[in-house]
Image 1 (cartoon, one colour):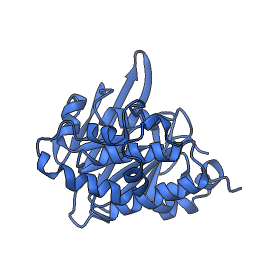
Image 2 (image 1 turned 90 degrees about the vertical axis):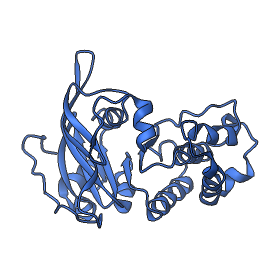
Image 3 (image 1 turned 30 degrees about the horizontal axis):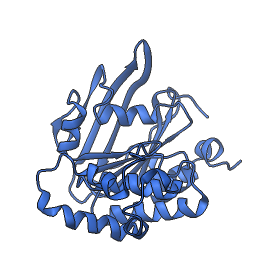
Image 4 (image 1 turned 30 degrees about the vertical axis):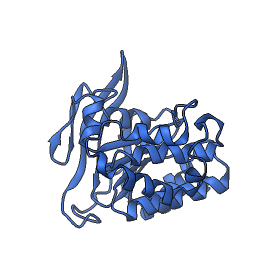
Length: 258
């Protein structure tokens, strides 16, 4: 696969797929470090209203660090991040959540000794509009009927797929204006992978834009509107998801197609 310096980015027309013109999230030339390690090197991407946008790449390419730069856990040293037109580059993580960006993290990160319901309640911890709590809980249970059946069960005793459902449900309890999903299919049986992706499409169809980081590139590109390919901390290729699926470089490197 070509290096980031030689690969060609294919621009997508502004306003495509969002019905409103501009992006809800803009990441512009960010550089993020872990100490002296330069992990993210000038990443630029955007998510428009109504879209699923996927970020694919090999392990260590910088995908999760990009999300951590957006959500305030790793602040970029350079560049700019705006959400709904407001600069959030240096906002602390709790303020980013309060503004409407919610994330289901890699590895799920549940509270294993707390019940399913208690984990879901943690997702609404910062909300002030508690009058809508029941409505949002019903929405999560509609999306994930298994969680309604297991609401009193300790989260640590659930299967991996069920734990992933709790992690996504918890993120939805914050009523996000943008949902970020970090490796939602990791470690799951194929039947659960298919179910999780069906639910991702359903969440998006209900009006929530999604930024999806996923190693299962084939599934991610199948549900996404647009995609970005990361290599060594940089965006190597960007295009519509269907065209990325047909890109020879992407097919060889990430889709297992020779």
